[in-house]
Image 1 (cartoon, helix red, strand yellow):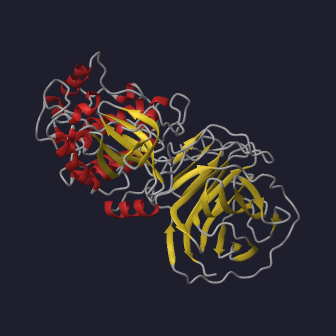
Image 2 (cartoon, rainbow, N blue to C red):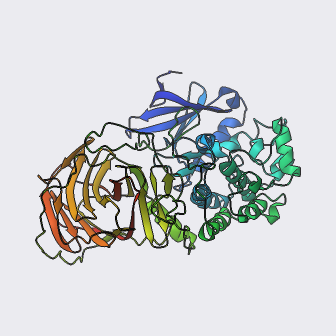
Image 3 (spheres, helix red, strand yellow):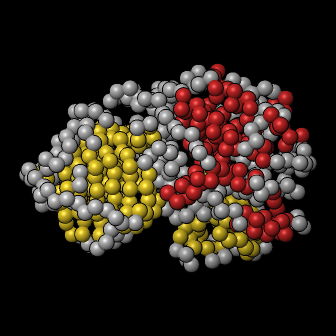
Length: 573
């Protein structure tokens, strides 16, 4: 086989190797995107039934459509070797994040909540993964998890095993019925494995330890689940009872669905205060292309974060990404976030619809270089036209699964609280932004926003026509009455006002709420605050893109903004 290509796919590098396949990062010239090509080892193909099973399973998994399942694009055979073509997931496997350190309960809950509906969807079709583990939970470029290798596990049932029988799975995650070799497995085996994954995310180790894989497997069959509080005494006591249920030896005593398991985890988030201490740090996402098998659409590397000097924007710091919802705090400092309030989910179908149509993505970006207070200007009090336009997207931030990210790291974070969606920035001159996953051309973007306390020094506002992490328009205000329209093009900031900052007495000062509106219609960019047109410029560089929210810190004290009533409507030219 050519080392340069597999089928039509141009090989770029090997990104992983496992027990049954090697995975390559490849380029699909037909669709002009990166893909992951999984090349199955030849010894598996020597089994007389394998090729037929391979084709059946490829067809089966290709029919499954869910945002939390890595899709199969194509399959084929070349030089007597079979291959699958899958979405490339540049965020790597959940395994990598666990290796970096224990994860917070809120982040672990987020991961479980996102993949649980996917498991329920395939279980309803009679499909059982059989080998669910952190290595098969992959992250896209924005940290969203998806399950890989559905169907692939089935292919090995007659060709690989643990003891020479038809047992299939990884010993550390196998349910008791898998260890026994039961043939009537159902989705509750995957739910058991999901409980093991939760334990590992929260402790950095599996619930059972032994010298050999078989001994580990036998402990799943015979030993009680150890109390997780012996490893993480900071966790709510309810986590123990949830783990006892999800990992019950008798599957009749387990949760009947993965979503039921996730719902109980979210209920803890509603009633418990999560400690934010150095013993159990939040871990920023780290892209890895070498340690784990990774697949997903070509999104490039995870969005970088930057240290943001006011003049020099070239200094960078480690990447940040989706880790957890903000930790509880009681004041402006790290203790400021109160208990995370998560509303009960009314219906799974509604959640799935919102997730598919409006999943948020996130990132951090370099600060607005050179944005220093300039000449004072008071806006002409022209009333913004009453909007009768078609609503394209709306979110009041009451639903923590509506698609916006929940993230926390030492630099700052994003998350849902009872009073709205918060973005907070700890680092001086740091900036965080979050965006929708829909692209639009001519739109009007609206949001209510306010700093959470008096005396905070930073800016906040809206993003329009965001192409990527280096190209977008921004509309921002400060608590002292300054405002600005500008663009970030090819990683270079270009304020579109000659004086950089303007000032208006229309802007409510301090911690008061401001209604922000950014109109992007044709070449015209208009910025309204509290229904008054503050400024308007023309620019033709970006004609469409994503919409989003931003907040930046300009002081040594943290800066935090709460957003509400986000709305996107059509805007005529």
